[in-house]
Length: 372
Image (cartoon, rainbow, N blue to C red; front, side, top):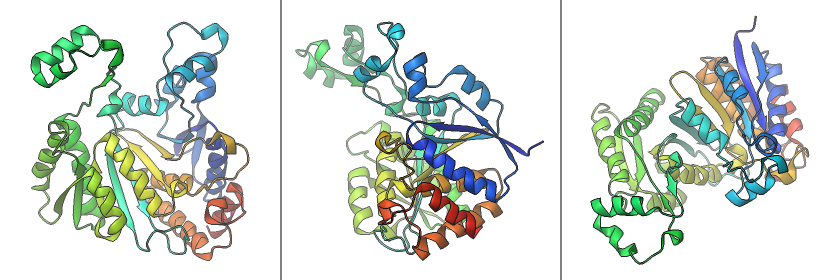
């Protein structure tokens, strides 16, 4: 009987390509696991009006964690048109399966390391070592939205905030509203995770990235909570920055920063910027981590035009495997994989197109496997 059961979710597009590359490495290290295929993604939306079928939820409930490739998501109107004829016109609404997974399993922490490997021609600067902690279940991603704006919602908001009066003459069918919802518990959890990581790995500071000067209540809650949590970690400085300024400073002085922590939307944005500093989304891995379950995925999209061509860089997927090893407590395997990837990158003999090479996703994976 295998030591671990891993839900295997390739998803759409190049998700299949990079997952195939990951399997080459997993087999090479003789990782003691059973891989259970689970359906997720665009094809199941089109044929079942559900990109995350209940059978997949059942599989995740009976596995230790999941590896996930990528999904395709399109705007609301295009989602409706993509359904098979028998499902159209029945008020089916597309919802991102990865967002639903995060909420369904309370995968409250999104961990996104961005490390500049020596020899990578795409590095913005050498020695960049950034780790983004993104709150993963709240903020604008909760999906509490209105369009058109119902009169009762308008009046309820106006009753508690007079600023809503400026829209009195705007018809409801010309107003869209999305609620940004942050909780004290959500803020405390993600900030504590960031400080614990900094303490464990020797970082001297944690930077909370928000916009409290304008978004006073929700961003303000994050910053106020960060100040409270920081008191429990006297050896680690708390730095406070605004999201817009942070984007500038990361370009100007990326080596000044280590652990960043922020809310869901800002985390999504700033982590992509951090990824570009170390080579782009081909090097951007993430872990969606809860108290009892985790899903590991590269942060790039499904890139349908490249599907099946084995063209994209699989390093982000391999780095996601490394995060999975670490979460499972298989840190020796994680260190070996990290060293093998670093060696392949430093040698520069095997590279995908984004790094100026001509090798396939599978050839890169095979080169890493050879180092193992």
